[in-house]
Length: 497
Image (tube, rainbow, N blue to C red; front, side, top):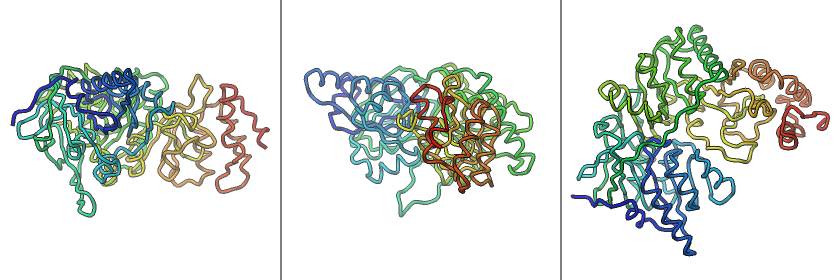
């Protein structure tokens, strides 16, 4: 079968107001680029003529500006899920102009197949190769692309020359059967394969192919600073201590790490610590630090959902595929983030918190409890099922005007039952085998910024002798004070006594 090659504009003409579209991409890596921009232009043209044009947007996770940014600026989004990090999309969501539902990333594909999302009209997928019999070789991420292709009526391929066809074999594509026919996912080590090299579809569903030559829109990462380096060293020293205490096997365990500058600093510190052996990763995002450690033989293998690396590092990978091909594996996010696999492998999860409270509850998503930042992502998939679950964060934000450790988290994504360790630049709070009062002592004494320790200790006295000494009158006093004066340090607990 020969496919029809078309422009991005022609592909966009097949997508109409009210459609739900599944786009490739997990972070900007492997995200569709040309067709989303053409859809945005189509939306603007419709709006200029007084007609409605909005679509439902489902992806793997966040994407690049050509997708989330372009569609948001065109006011072309009716709903967005499961995760985003684009400033324009964030503004659209927080202004109430687009609905957003936050989801654990491991659950998106199965919920689509179950019919919970309704009909998926189109899939827009970036690929580096496609065969006439319907074998699609993906690029720098997998995300939810296999499921989009399974359920969508129409598939459009962005065939991107930026990614070599030699990537074939770096992907492990597997969709579990749905209940009651589901079987165990046969991944017993990070480097085990359970699926195929390509996404396989009925070629008749591929309506058109758009040829592109567009780089991934992954920006550079903020360089490590003193605070992130100290957080990284605290994580590495804690895990080295667990290893010495025989609470981690001497061969070590697979690492899962979130995305961002703290995650890069943590991985660099793990690689530099002489007491931690070379390790494998079973994670959702591969960042620059992973590739650097791989070249130094400190990371032996990395299973992930995406190559979220800077342009120079991606070029290095592609220029040296003979080295990286046997050391990297990209999977669908329901496999990379599978709770079943995470629990079986005994991963050590390391994720970033926006805010934590003095009893160990963590907020990953909502600024001051109401404004969506990005989403929960995969942190919950891993945290609840980890061998050891760690959350990191700087002790303060906004030049010290905000404490990231508060009496009660303004929104809870991860309860105290899942959070085992909290680490800031000041130290480590090991919350295992501790009551709420003991958790309070561990967190305040080891993780809180010195400016806020007396403030939080004074708060503790307001809770009396309860099992969890929380004061409902004062629990959000620090948040309220910030909203009134711009500085949490101004709180006066006497107002709540």
